[in-house]
Image (tube, rainbow, N blue to C red; front, side, top):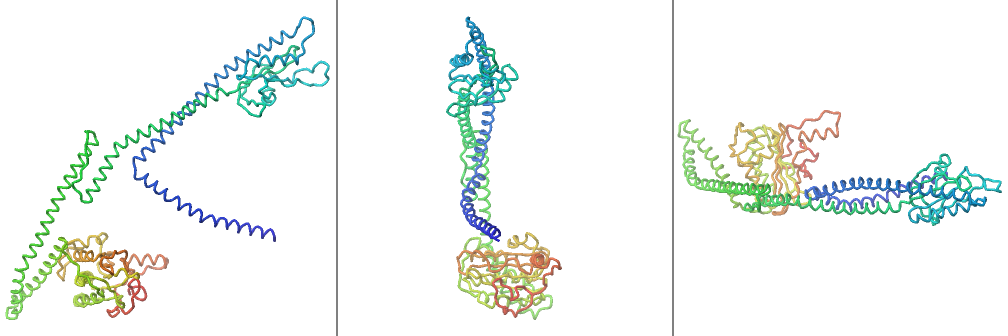
Length: 607
């Protein structure tokens, strides 16, 4: 039981520590994310930085490779020179030791010199000439005999220079090698100083005999202090030269890239100014190289572009003026013709059938001509910037009611109905009632025209934040092909040019509607799918001039085929996807279902 409690407590402490560390990690991540994103953004947008950084990295890699190669060559050369010098000096010392042993073997009086005293003097004599260059060490051999008068196998005490620890500086492997073979042996080892410091060295040893014929081991230790100083000097020189070389290559890369990048940046700035409408901007050209030719070509392009734009602007002004002048000039003769046509139309009962029918056709075509002329005049006002907004607080339910009442006869002839949803609450905004009524009339008439005799649903909604209102017109007719939603607001554009118009449209209604929406600071958008109908959404700010951030109604209706398929895939993956409804149930035209945030009925769907 105590063990279980201990494990449980340990797990709680671990989990608590991990939980406490997570906020710190998140704070650190947020703190480091800003500078990291700034550096990444600068790296992506600055080609000069990328080129210079790449040059520095590649130069650094090359310098490091060259440094490694050069250091290897220098080290190998120093080691070879050290081996040759050490071998020569050691062989000379060994010869001297042999000569000293031969000289001390016979003193002339028949009494040999004590070998221990002789060895001490020999080591001191050999080491006296190598101060700072080498050290001398003499060790006993396993093959040596005991001293006279001694019964044990006591060997000589180790002897060596005062700056070295004899037994610790010579490895056991080398001592065994000398006992096996009297030839000269070399080995890389470590000199141990009396103060405990160590130093790499080359050890050269050989087995010799003393003045009494007993074998002993004589070693020469050559430290690498001078070679290490030389290597450090070479490494420092290479590092200094490498740093200067990398910095020089970076500066060269920066200067070279700057000569190319500066004109490109200048061209980018000039292009941005040209795009902003400052068509007189030009690049400064100097020299005759490729960059200069690029600048001349850019300036030539800018001049041609300016000329073409000026020609197009002049042509556009002439076109707008022509449309405006013709529209105004046609009003007087059209008024006269209209008066004459009214007189003829009123007297048509006394004409023969063919003449009476001609009078009716004349009047209907005059109505269409007047509508086209009015649209042309309105378009010319928008083009000239002379359109004015007469905004006043208006309940859009009243506007929708007038539009629906005016379009009901056309809907009845088509065999459908006009249904209003979301009209149970006021939808008030500062708008120009005349312009908004014209927009909604165009949308409703188009929905009836392309609705294939099915019902048309008009939805109203006000944003919960009180900043926007919206009106959507939904039909279930032929719909829109992919890409038509962007082109449907173009002037004189028709989704199906071969389709007959029973209402005599001019092809300018949606274009004028878009301009009216923009004049209010709002948006007019379209959605549609082939065979699934279309929906047009008008979104307006509640207060004229306020920025528009969203819409209280979705652009794609919830009863669209794509929406139904997505919901069916989430909710009923094993069942058949339901088909979109053909008609929408009436709610009395007054939206008695109550207003919801999305503009749909109480069940959230159009039934």
